[in-house]
Image 1 (cartoon, rainbow, N blue to C red):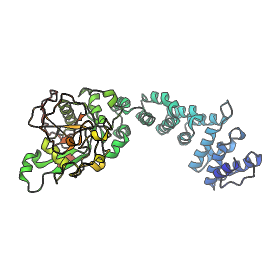
Image 2: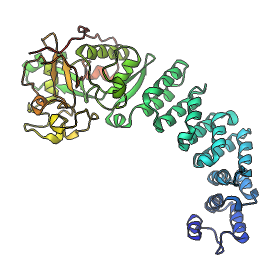
Image 3: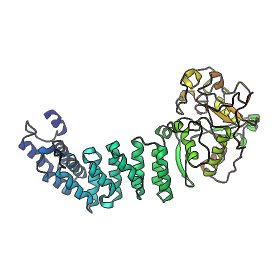
Image 4: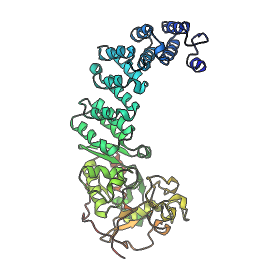
Length: 460
């Protein structure tokens, strides 16, 4: 015990036993030395770990209320919060409760900050800080953060705060519940309510960023609130026709320039449209919702087109499926390789049947399998719908269900499929607005509407 105490208190002279009255006196004297805030902090934290041995709380209270250094005051509040007295509430808690209910906003914020590290022993104080303490937004925000650190015990309190009229408190509760493992999908309606009630855009953007899976944020996906609807915008890759290739320029839409999504359409993106009732739920939707960072699967060509139209309406930009030529260009690169990464098969670069995973993987899981343009997951994972001259459309890229020959950048067979099943089929979108116009967010672009009837995959 002595060794642990000495590590906590390197700046305080101690007698051999920490339980002696002399040692306590030395610690309490250290609290009074305003010229040494580092010593005050160390002494306060040491006293906080000594339980009911600390009988005189006056030095800690004086430091809390009259101290000069804010960090030392936080340390004093923390000590008062964590001191315990058997089954009885410690008198220090009553001092903090009075402070939280008072009108000294600086004091309430100091106490709330101390409670972030206090944990469950100060649970009731944390609840007070999050709910009614001084009616100061910042105190309540910090208190809600402290609730998030308590763990499952605080779930009910955080859930109640989701309906708080203060958007700062409600948004922080959303973040904390998401941190504790509550699904992003279940928390999105709270965000929409906050938007309808006029929460500041900065708050909405912060919460959207929180609810977007971390892996997707790292890959460049961005959450947006557009026209009262939550959408997720994928990172794009700009592709140009090769210089001097008139035939390729003619084959590629939009004058040989297009932007294609770097990754397949994800469950997280598609869930936004399902929530807005713009598309129907795919097969196994409840299961897919547990894997937001995976590509959405089991969707028809009509489903993918409906999603593109919905996204276009909200962004005022022309989203659509790629043509076969565009898809193959993005996959094969300037060198027209057999696979996105080169001319030889490598099972470490794609999720195909040879991987024996029998399921999708999160988008971006095979960065070494990217095409020379930077497009990922163009081999395996899910097949992707393309527009083609055939009414039923075309599929490219193979999937986790198919062998490596289907993962080639140019499909070895005709543009039609050989089964009515849509298992393992997803999509990737193109934004046909020119990069210059896209970056300036110009609106009014027209979206070519393909037939929306869901067509089965037909036999060759």
